[in-house]
Structure formats: structure tokens, C-alpha cells
Length: 115
Image 1 (cartoon, one colour):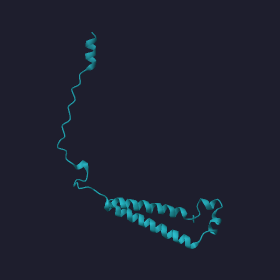
Image 2 (cartoon, rainbow, N blue to C red; image 1 turned 45 degrees about the horizontal axis):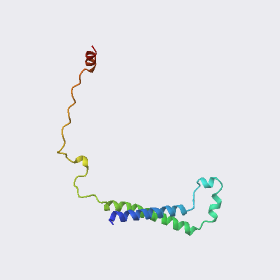
Image 3 (cartoon, rainbow, N blue to C red; image 1 turned 180 degrees about the vertical axis):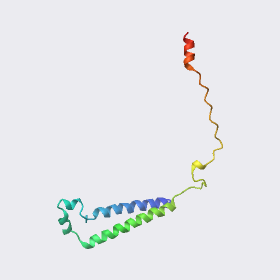
Image 4 (cartoon, rainbow, N blue to C red; image 1 turned 90 degrees about the horizontal axis):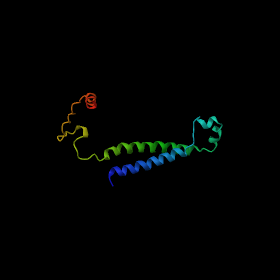
């Protein structure tokens, strides 16, 4: 396994954990749920320590995800070519474009053959 593959697996796992932690959290603001009368019932079942843990874990996982993405850039295999782009390569085998044949007056030729 290459280093990039290991980073990619870690990024997928951390992203999945981040989604799970975000989905577990209770909505806190005055979003759509509070405008339909659900604002008071959401506060009854909430535990302060749980929300603190979920907030800290969300920020931690987001930071870890960002760091893994930035570090994985170093692990990408770029090959051994010194040319950065294929557009910069010089192609010595290029042939000149063929010249199109001169156009003849087709209307005059058709008229002459019809007589």
C-alpha cells in the first residue's frame, strides 16, 4: 500500500465519523424546527455535557480532516518526469499540414457538361 492510499483511507474514515457526529447533534438555533413549535421540546432531553462533547469532537474531527487532506498532498506520486505539462513537451515528429487543393468553379463545369 502506498502512503497516499493510507491517507485516503484515513480521510474517508474521519469524514464518515464527522458526518455521524454532526447527525447526532441536536439543532440549537432558531431554525425551521423552532418556527413550527418544536423549539421547547428539544431542550427538555438535552444534556449539557453531551453537547459539549459533540461540539468538541466536531471541531476536532474537522481539524483532523483538514490536516489529513493537506498532508496527503505531499504523499501523491507525481512520477519522475521533469516536464510539468504535456503542453510544454516539444514534438519533433510533427509533420506539416497538407495543403488543400485549389477550388474549381463547379457551377461552370456542371453547365458545360450539360450542353
